Image (cartoon, rainbow, N blue to C red; front, side):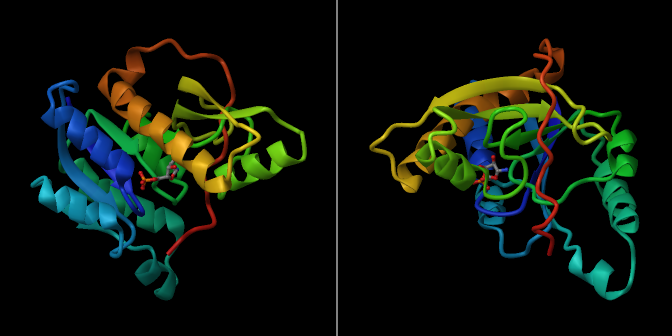
Length: 211
Ligand code: GRF
């Protein structure tokens, strides 16, 4: 199984996938890591692991008055050369268009640090923490979901609940959520499309953090 991982930042979930491959618990090969940000630390992680990288920023497209579709089509053409079995969005902060998704026969999965139908978009963990403080929720979670053109219609492949405690700070909650992600992301990178969907609707990914 050949995969491509898309990142925008730290890349700790990319690292979890790399570690799982290196320890033999995940059988696949990362052929390419794509980042829309040159500054993403995940690029350094990829280079250390000997994985080719592609930096593909949106800003030059915006500056040239080009559309998001043009960006996505060019990105799809570059990624297509690698003929991936699966694209994993691990902290990728741009919403991909229908054109891009259909190009890869929907073989794209995304990681989101919240339960289905809760806290979509940016700062999901912070908003869950605030909701807990107001007594609105008692738990949050993480999910991996299939990415389809209709943003809210995809189905989760994995949902894991994460408890929130009275003693939690935002930092301790973030740490618990990231641990859950690092545990579950490699598992779902293995055979995600063979798993039974759970029937929830998905959260919309962050469309605001574009660079
Ligand atoms: C993760 O919390 C993921 O759920 C969210 O962005 C974060 C990425 O973290 N979409 P990292 O870059 O993998 O460290």
